[in-house]
Image 1: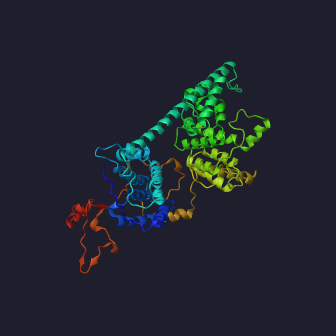
Image 2: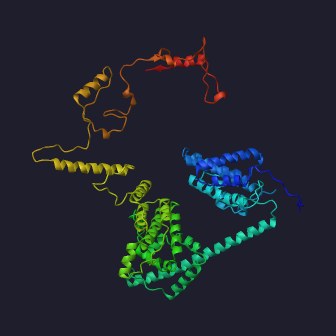
Image 3: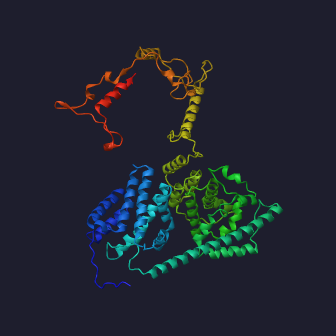
Length: 580
């Protein structure tokens, strides 16, 4: 063992005092580009004082924040941003794990696990280094996580204790036994989570088996479309186990329910419940959960219908929707969101209380939802049903948004998803909607055509005879305009076309009767002359300095290493060029 020195080690700080350190930390994590730039300038000054001893955490934080600042400016392409984020993330993982390496190299995943860096960050670094570049979305996500990790592991700890620049992600005085103990604790936690997932899956699979058996009995009796019977003794025991276990592992229950085969049915499950699998493509803009499938899961969801769990389910559903799932998963995820919002609707609650119907509802009493968070989650997870879900949220909010804000959000979502805006056809008295997409343009043309027809019919009298409108809109030129254009083209092989030509049948750059051979565009007679005979304007002549002209030197594409063109070479090239 190394003998520790009893003397106190003295450190030289790059910052003046603790106030400056806190000032820079707040500006770095302010999300304001101007403040972040100021903090980056201060760190540049620190580096001038530190030299090669700049703390890894400070260096990595500056690199990642610089990427965010450049990203917010909107002047770089996505591929350039991926390279910037990638370099900063690769440097972070390499530098933060470098001091843990021993004589025998150890895997980066193990080293990262020791300092609470998840495996997906190491995998992101691996993809950036050895495989195809990841998407910009994943690079931004990795940057945000690493910055949060640095804030928690370095900046916050520094503020809570004596400032020192000699910070490592893993203390060099930390014994190997502590590393082993920490690793064992992490393994134990991970094993407990795996066992909990397994237990939840077993409970939910047992529940599904009981429900499938109940449905088969209903089908034999011809009552599969009626009210399902009360829970059997076996199902009641399973529901009791689910309720007991959900109080301890609520998050795990919500995660497992998001998997295929549970809230998102498989094709085999749909077939067993006599549900047509093609229903999810009938109306993807206004999804509706099949009633049989809702009845299938109602007993389980009623057991878990606490306000906390319902909000957690909504968060998980929107999170799954933001991962761009398949069309089948998208339909059922959006259907469950719509069903939960419908259960909480004021009008639906009044109607069901009036009719005293509660068996088809997940919960009876109205819940308090974080409406602003729901709007943000819905907008951040665009899909064909996003406008439909937004309308449900708007109609149920305790304090609705202004009508202008609702209309703008719906239009933005419709543009982003390229979906048809249901119930958004403008009234005759409404002002014309702005044209954002081809669909908007088509609607504007249809509206104008309809208004023109109404005007035509109102102005039409029995004594007036008007020709029916034609689809082709021909340019009507007056005799003076034709004469003026012909005079401008006098002496040219071109002339003004006054024929009625259906130009929409011809692509741009092509005229009627034009063959495929482009040589037909050549004029019959033409003359040529060399470059030396070309008339040059005086301002294009080379500049003179005194009595000498500056010699012309043209380099190749390789810069200073390329060959120089001599005047003799240029004269030969010019002599061979001919201009029409």
